[in-house]
Image (cartoon, rainbow, N blue to C red; front, side):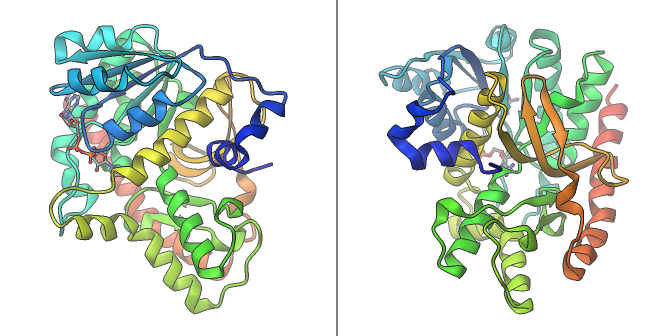
Length: 342
Ligand code: NAI
C-alpha cells in the first residue's frame, strides 16, 4: 500500500481503469523554469498526465517554443506559455500545483550549496509571486540547495501571511528513485517492487537512505550498506561528472518530479493511499525541516510517518545524528537570507 503511485500506474498499465480511482483532467499545474534542462522533460511528462487540464509554462526566456511543441501532443491538457516577470502573475492564477525547477545547476567540483547565491534570490522572487497569486497551491521546490531553498520559501510565505506548512515541499523524490534503482540492481530484484525510504535532506550526507526499511526486505552486508548509501548520496555528483560541465541530472529528475506531481494530483483528487518522501516542515526530529515519508491528502501533508525513524540500525542512527548539524546550518542559512532581504 505504501508504494509510489506514478510507478504503480506505469507498471499496471491498462489495469489502472479497474481501480475505483477514476482520473479526471481538472487540475492546473505551473512549471517555473520550464525551458530548462529539467523543465522541458518535466513539462512533457506532466502533459501526459490524465489529471491535468491546464499546463502553464513560465521562464525568463525560450518558453514559447517549448509550449508550441508540447501543445501538439493529443493529451487532455491545454498548454500556455508565459515569458518574463510581467507574465509571472498570470502564469500562477488559479493554479493547483506549482513546480519550481528555476535556477542554475551544478558543474563538476561544485556542491549544491555553491548554488545558493544565485538560486536563493530566484526562489525568493518566484515564491513571492506564488504567495500573491495562488497561495492555496501545493508548492514543489526543486531548485538547489533544497535544504535551504525550502526554508527560504517558508519565510517568504510567512511574511506574506499565507504560509501553510502542509503545502510546501522540497522535492527529494530523485533520492528515492535512485535508492530503489541501485538496491534493485544490487539484489537482482524487480525494479518496480522496490521501495526505499530516504530521509534527512537533499545534499551529500544529509541524504539518508534507510536501507533496513526497504520493501520487500533485503539482507545486505555492512559493506553493501556502506557502498549503497554512499552511491545514493553521490548519485547527483555521478551525473554531474558524467555530463562534464553540461549540467546536472535533468531526465531522471524530471521523471522523479513528475512522479511527485502525479502523487500530489492523486491526493488532491481524493485518493486516500498516497505516500511520498519529501522535505517538509517536521517535528520528527529537533530540526524544523526534515525529509521523511508523508501521507498526502487533499490539504497537503496529512501525516508524517514516524515509524520509519524507529528501530534504526546502528549505522543509520549514527548517520542520522551526523547529518543533523549540516542540515541545521543549511536551514539557518536559508532563514537568515530570507530575513536579511526583508
Ligand atoms: P537549467 O539551467 O537547465 O534550467 C534552469 C531554467 O531556469 C532555465 O531555463 C532558466 O532560464 C530558468 N530560470 C533562471 N532564472 C529564472 C527565474 N528568475 N524565473 C524563472 N526561470 C528562471 O537547470 P536545470 O538542470 O533544469 O536545474 C534546475 C535546478 O534544479 C538547479 O538548481 C538544480 O540544482 C536543481 N536540481 C534539483 C534536483 C533535486 O533533486 N531537487 C536534482 C537536479 C537538479
